[in-house]
Length: 112
Length: 110
Image 1 (tube, rainbow over the protein chains, first blue to last red):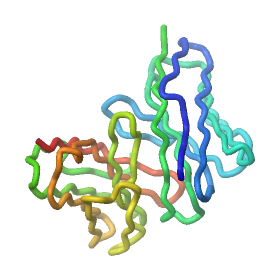
Image 2 (tube, chains in turn red, purple):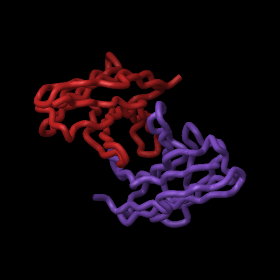
Image 3 (cartoon, helix red, strand yellow):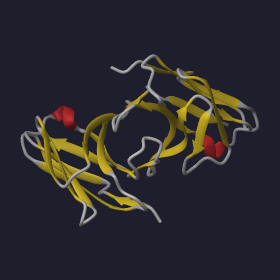
Image 4 (tube, each protein chain N blue to C red):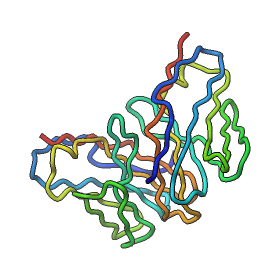
């Protein structure tokens, strides 16, 4: 079967660093995406990894290890506005019409 | 922001009635998707389209149908709504690995 596992909730302190993990087991893998969603809002794209290693975009970084079927999202210098849900998503093929599977999401709570 | 809208934004309907949700884009993206989002389940793909008149099923397609007669419009139809279809529905578009999501439609089936 297909599965993506990520923690349901994570709590961190403002200004700190937090890592949100995602492990996957899918038939076919081409890449891993991350999305952010604030309460009442729509998901917004954060990053995409097709190759092993770390991709950095400002305060956010995303890592992928294809051999371990594992990735993570790293958020640095946490701000209160980072309080949101974060979803990992597996792209199962190179073509855009291959179905994307989303994890159930990680709720990030940030304490002042 | 990507030009993607959904209508209606909110709808309350009764069990057994047909419902159609509309997704409209102005970006000329090839791919369009319908998801539902429920607590504890994340985003689940209902149907998607990879071109005009080209659609395929997602993981939770039972009870739903779609149509795409124009690049810009992707319709999701619940032929006979059930209470289990109460959810928030998101449309998304893409041309690359990045998906752009619409604002969502909150559907309540009584």
